[in-house]
Image (cartoon, rainbow, N blue to C red; front, side):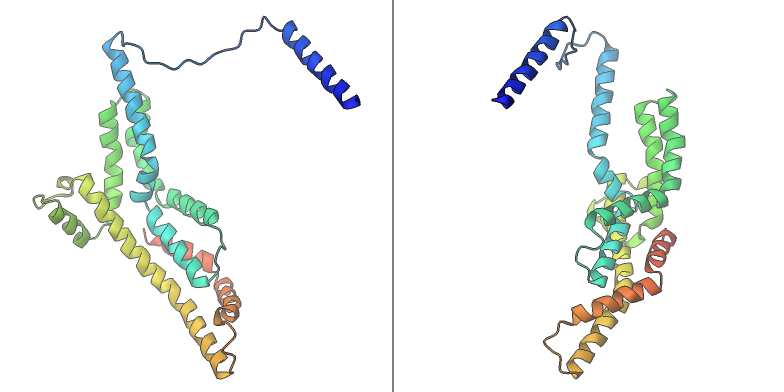
Length: 247
């Protein structure tokens, strides 16, 4: 009974407060499509649509046109080699890969900001010119990391004429060539990382078999030794240093 009385008092206080402030105007949000009154309105609408399209493609651009692919694959190989199932967690690996991507791509992003973004925000460049200016540093970065063999493959698959200069290579040909080049380098570095951990697993399995302890999982014994080795050689420092120097 006491609880019901408290609820009624609270409801009465709320209603009295609402009645006292009934004259307060609350804002409303309206979404709709109106007819353009001038060509400038049409241009502004198209610019907003273009910006939204670019934002929707931002994750793919970040993954496929930067160093993120190589870094996250190397870190995944590292965790696989250590034999730890969820340590570090996926969120930590992806977060570390993102920050390492921003670090390795800083010169490229800085060039994009100076050549395209800042002049565009200052009104000195149109949208199309800003996109072309922003594309140039990214293309330069991708060309440095793309193998000629991979680039020749996609030029041949696209049935394009043989390019004489890098400017003759279209971006839609350059991006997939860059991606498979990054995959190859990531798997090469992942293989090198895997070797010492594989040796520890083989030695541990051989010792257990020689001792007749075949029912004991070798992974259970080798895991502490692999972690100890990784800590003793300062593995995170070596891995991050190798990734940064590879660019």
